[in-house]
Each structure stands twice: as C-alpha cells, then as structure tokens.
Image (cartoon, rainbow, N blue to C red):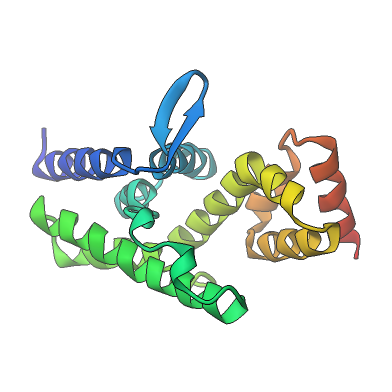
Length: 197
C-alpha cells in the first residue's frame, strides 16, 4: 500500500466514523444511519457515476462535504433569506475546517488540503471541474432523495423556484443525469413546469 493510499484510507475511515455519529437518525433499506452519513454515501455514489476517474481530492470531499453539519442548526440563524445564506456560508467553512483537521492528522500535504477545501467551499465552480462535479452530485442527491419531501412542505411556486435554482447549478452532464431520474409524478410535474417558465 502506498503512503498516499494509506492516508486516503485513514482519512475516509475517520470522516465516515464522524458522519456515523450524527444524532439525526434516518432509516433506509432496513438500516439506520446518521443523516449526514447517509447523505455522504449517496454523494459518493453520484460522484463516481458522474466521474469514474474522480480526483483524490474530489473523492475525499465526497466523504466530508457535510461533515458535522449538526453542529450548526438552521434555527441559530434568522429565518429569512439572509439568515439562510449566513447559515450556509458558516456551514461551508465549518465543513472545510473539520475536513482540514482530519487531512492534516493523517499526513496529507497542503496541496490536497487546499483542493478539498476548495470543493467544500464550492469556490470557482465555473472554472474548477471538481467543484462543478460536487455541485452536480449535491443537486442530484437533492432531486433523487430529498426534493419530494420538500415539495410536500412548500407551495408549488416556491418549490419551482427552488428547482430552477438547483437546475441552474447543474452542468450539461448533470442535467442529463437529472432527466434520467425516476421521480414521483408530482415532483416530475413541478420540474417540467419550473423549466418551462
């Protein structure tokens, strides 16, 4: 085993162990997971579908994109658009800091740490293919597993706005993948209406 592979395996093991401690528990296919743990597994699957030759930094980021998300509840910020954006920005820095700590501990150099931070923070999406792939994967996880639940709690117009914003973040390949998803009829209808508007 190479030193890099050893560092990768140790980093992934630590990240996965942290994700498994998420106090927000969810059930899927008869098993219980931490919410962030299950999200990370789904993210990893989409990353590999989108890019079978994903970089080491992107693979690492797929394990830690939402690491320790539960530390910073949405309720700690104003319940408006500005508060939402502050929460998201604070979370991104928190995820990047937690990831950096683990990567340093297992011996990664500054270059890989910088690359993972860039992905965690979703910096330079237009010019960084790894950041765009992460954005695609995040949107696809949302559409496949989370959007139907969101749609049940929002008026159609609000949900269509959310779907348009997600769609606009997707690359051409991400959009092709999204169009191939099997979605419930109501969500599929909302997506069609959102894209036609």
